Image (cartoon, rainbow, N blue to C red; front, side, top):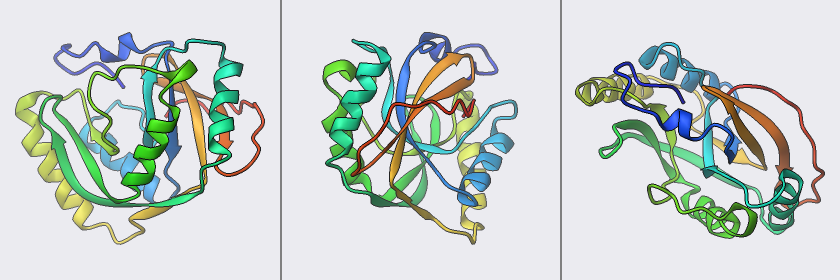
Length: 199
């Protein structure tokens, strides 16, 4: 996340140091979505993903938080996500891809994990989606949404993917998220770090 062109968004600064839980989207779909996001918001540093837990501070150590997530995910089965249509969050002027399958599973994971070390009162209700453009001027939203719809309509590759593991990530600097741990669904998981960098 980065500052908007008119300097009105400070959300990126406010979440530095926070943690989130995401499912990265595999290629070639991820490459297509990352290019679309860069075309709409040059200078951004995208890494296509679906968020399960939005950015939040931790109430305990990183190790304890990872152990808590892993304990819950041992009982969660892998599932499939299908992408739907380009939509807009009117309140925040965010252009996003809605989901046509996998929403119930994502909501269950959110409800399961948003407590204990990771409990947090969200600014907006949890709404599973894939961000396409954010921190944009309100007057640009309709144009960008239109471009995104046309581009998405022309995509002939896969429009879905399987979720078998989640990534615990930290916002370490403006526009820079670092992977802290990868946690599989339905299996024992070990604390680890691969430091794959920004998303």
